[in-house]
Length: 82
Image (tube, rainbow, N blue to C red):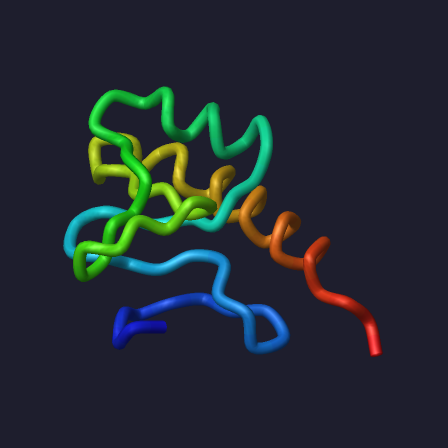
């Protein structure tokens, strides 16, 4: 996605690496919880803020796995089965 190293499910990105930060596609409470971390912010690649995406700095790397699991579940919930 946008040339960043990313993880996808069924062709949909749910997390990616942007410099030393991880970026997660989250919704609802998980999004708000991620944004509550100091230094976390809505991801703004190329000057265009992404409303469901949050960039979390490396200082919270120990929480990235849980955030990635939440992002995966969120993106899977958005995929309409054929």
